[in-house]
Length: 484
Image (cartoon, rainbow, N blue to C red):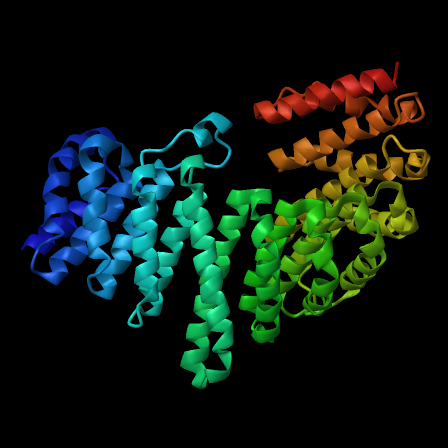
């Protein structure tokens, strides 16, 4: 009966008006928290699930000074219970961090102030790390615990950064131990278990890098050494390779030019992934890494650009490679061009040829999948054009773009004339017009910019976000200046 009552209560939390539910949940919370000590494991399991739903759906009912201490104590105690209860407690703790913690993108002031969870950070993360250490910890609740740790790291504030640093050190030690054990793997179960654990470690380390940013520098050598060992050990296990690559991408973004020393050792592992045409996911991640490296290294990318461009252009020719990966490749051209500027000249003609050809694809309006694909394709091309124009703008070689202006504007016109156009396509297309006007401010492309359709689009009356409006206003100013 008790379990059924709690299950019913947990089930109605999603649907009714939160204002109606709030007084009920306020009344029930202390009772539910006490029920985490119930003698019946089924009751405890359902209570943990219900508390997780409250943390997820009705966080406003949890009053930090009243409920937080008993709630967190009950959930942390529940971590020592059977695997199902422990997994539900992990999920509830993860939801708490997601709903109450600092959110990336909040202002610096918020990050500098302790959050309501700060006093519990060390205790909760330590308890989760202890849970993942036990030999009985099975896949499902171990993964739930690592996901909760990742959430606590993602939402940490300045005062809890030491907890993030200590967690990183613990996870790297576990990674080292696990890599040392790979010769003892017997059979598929062992291998799957090993892979799952490594994936969890990669997820935690990625969140640590994103949180500490260039503060990860002291651990960078150790992380990169372990990742290269992991990539070697992963062999053809593409999910593990993807996880390792995502850590590399995060590390390059955090270290920027400080990532340069690791590139020669890493590239030999990147090229086979780029050539794994039948593996869409891995190939997409690998293309993304080229973009990450280009953004991180800036003009230092020039020494690798020839190899990058050759492999990317080759991939575009492939009949096997999934067409969505090809969209990622096109926007990656923009990343490389923006990074190396005029040094992109040797690849300009070939790239512009490919982009023009791709931009001319017209879908059959009845084929919904193709219509959607072409819309994404055009956005990828606009991103590439934007990067290329930005790379050449304000350099002596900007005139190399002049022959390509008509085909760039042709695509812009096609995108803006599309009745199904998306907000992101509008922003990219109008932004490109502004970039071209900004690149040629002295009337060199005046005759193109005075076209009536451009004037009409820049007087846009359609409902768009404030961000897009800002882009439209800026483009209007640039065009005015370039056609004066």
